[in-house]
Amino acid sequence: MLKTLAVANYRSINKLVIPLGRLNLITGPNGSGKSNLYRALRLLAETAQGGVVNALAREGGLDSTFWAGPETISRRMRNGEVAIEPTVRQGVKRLRLGFAGEDFSYSISLGLPDSNGHFMLPGDTQPSPSRFSLDPQIKRECIWAGPLYRPASLLVDRNGAMIRAREARSWDVLAQHTQNFDSLFDQIGSLRSSPEVFQMREFIRRWRFYDHFRSDADAPVRQPQLGTRTPVLHHDGRDLAAALQTINEIGDPEALQVAISDAFPGARLNIAPLAGGRFAIEFFQEGLLRPLSAAELSDGTLRYLLLIAALLTPRPPSLMVLNEPETSLHPDLLPALARLIIRASEQCQVWVVSHARRLISALQEDPECNCIVLEKTFGQTGIVGQRVLDEPAWNWPD
Image 1 (cartoon, rainbow, N blue to C red):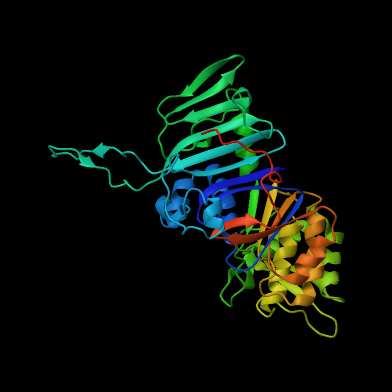
Image 2: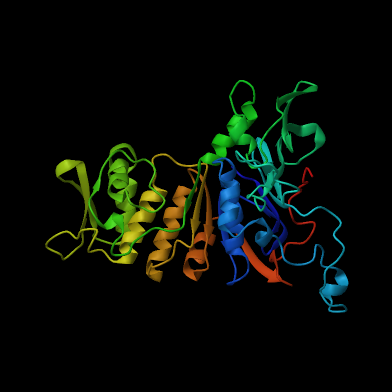
């Protein structure tokens, strides 16, 4: 489970250290930085998938994701005594992401390239500069034991092209020519030589994000789909029928029926097998003489079924992230959704980004709910009520 999330120099986030619990609710007004915090978490997830550089490129490149304000907002700036203006930078310009877990912690530092090298084509007499001159470079990656970085707790250290791991009281060099666009998770990770890297990589790979279920008229979920055992719902929900049937067979069918009855009293669900191994959804409602197919369901009903399939998964992730799950849902459904989320948080760590008042109020009834309200001051995202001494202890390795 994540205990702390740290982000520095990313969009509206200059410096932010967040305490996390089993159930985390991120809320705040529009423009306060909820989406930026969510994107930062997704970037961290991409490190274990080998896609952090591509993810930054899709966001417009590293330079466009840097914090756009001054490195430090002084007391006189905050008091309005002087205008907010650039200051002399004291440190190198880096995008830093990190988290503290129960056993191990991880951080990554990305920066602009000093040089991405040159290349020569057959027949050329002079080398040409690389066309990838804007690609961000991974400058530093570290894995350490415990929640707080100290030189003595460092287990794996990637600095530039070299990766080394602690071996008793000395260091064992694992790689010396790591490409600056490859994470250490791509280069090492065998259980024998670097068990910490293997464990951290698999922990991050088990994070699950749901933020863009498709429920439009042409969405695949509205048509019968080929069915195979599906313990994990696809991120766009295309295999909903198979996921629901998997819950019926190897998951908790009683919890599935309770979740449907809680949201739609008198309703029940059936997954009908069709020719060719395809599955179709049949949704029975009180008073109707025939079941409704997925193509006939409203956006809100279909999205709720998708959330049920995601939250009742027979294979819980290490972290499940729901970005504005209230989209398309009637406010009367939100208390039932909150109960479903709270139930899921007993099996895995859950992160919910929302600004729906009824969902927020219902989630806050759970004593384990860690509510984080964001605000923006001088363009900088912060946590309401968090002072310097309130934030978790955190040290960046570089």
